[in-house]
Amino acid sequence: MKNKHIMTGLLLLGLTLVAGFFSGREFLSLRRNDEIFPGSGLTARKRLSDYFPALKDTAGDTEVFIFDSAAQGGNLLILGGTHPNEPAGFMTAILLAETIRAARGKAVIIPWANASGFTHSDPQEGSPQRFFIETPTGRRWFRLGSRVTNPVHQWPDPTIYTNPMGQKLAGIEARNLNRAYPGKATGNLTEKVAFAIMALIRKEGIDLGIDLHESAPEYPVINAIVFHENASELAAIAQMELQAEGFEFRLEASPPNLRGLTHREWGDAAGIKAVLLETPNASHGRLKGRPTVSLIVDGKDKYYERASRLGRLFVPYGPEGIPLKLRVARHLAGVQAILASLHELEPDETIELANIPSPAEVQSKGIGLFLHPALK
Amino acid sequence: MRILYHLIVFYITIHLVWGLFREKKFWKQASLVLVLILFLLRLLLIE
View 1 (cartoon, chains in turn brown, orange):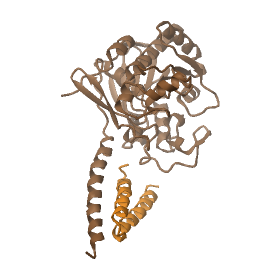
View 2 (view 1 turned 180 degrees about the vertical axis):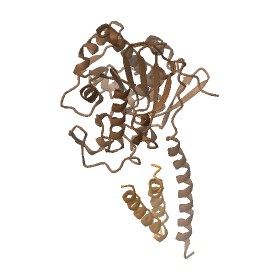
View 3 (view 1 turned 60 degrees about the vertical axis):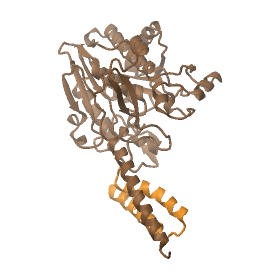
View 4 (view 1 turned 120 degrees about the horizontal axis):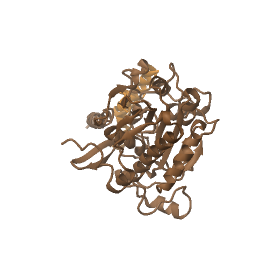
């Protein structure tokens, strides 16, 4: 047949549209937020755009949960999802938002700090788009995003990115929220998000900011408390307390010449005590095997186990892996130790949070027991 | 910037569709289609 290739072209074009429809639907579903079911301690549910209206109706706008005791004390900011491919960070923030009640002072929680980053995953990594946690009534699914803002929302990357503090970085870092502080009202989307978080810090009178992260086991800043010099004593006392509880944490001073990060700019620009916590996560390390839901949740990886035996890692990595429940337990223990340390150093700024799940119980029973059960 | 992005992606998409109907070998047509899916998703700002 003379025009056989035209017919084949039409058929393939039809298949393209069908495949595009289904894959497009899957990608678009990532733009719907996972549900959070805040506990009875919630006093206000806001959006980041309430602090910087230019963010309204943009992909950078995100939810803010406020737990205010009305009793005099300090004000705490907890950030999860600065890097949406670091699940222990945002799962700890979600867990806290679903359980805590403020007994003294105020806690402000942002679980998806870089909301745009949750709408896509890192290209060429083969990462799952979602992972699940078992709860008593079934599975709850959570998105796993990319380290950086979605290029659909912020494009193009410059060849060299100069951040708001004048530091020159690789172009892709223009989409990294943790290089964009203190933000810029007229900057790119990521800089606007950082600017909005700074506005929130000022408006809510935040005294202490904790940014929850994860890092690859081969990265030296791991199982660590990174602190601004404003928070050096706070971090040192917290570390001793954590060691007494059996959690090993390194102390890392925020380098003064590394600009744009929470542990630097929150302290410099807003004068608050700023700390960042890191736990080990194999699923975004470079030595990992197949990136699966199991790798994210159970944290077992034979290649990391081998690398550990060869002495190439900065944390021990055995056959039992480093499961998400342990990483979340470490973050919870870190938050509690930092709050206890704040109480010791600045009694007027005491922040008491009731109902924080016990790290030991989270470690032994899992996260799902403490999260809101899955809806049937 | 978004208009520029659309123009670039649209230009390449048109070439891919044009190539799909000019190409006579099936496997080359199939290869074009694999790339075309990605460009359609980009054209619609989905991914």
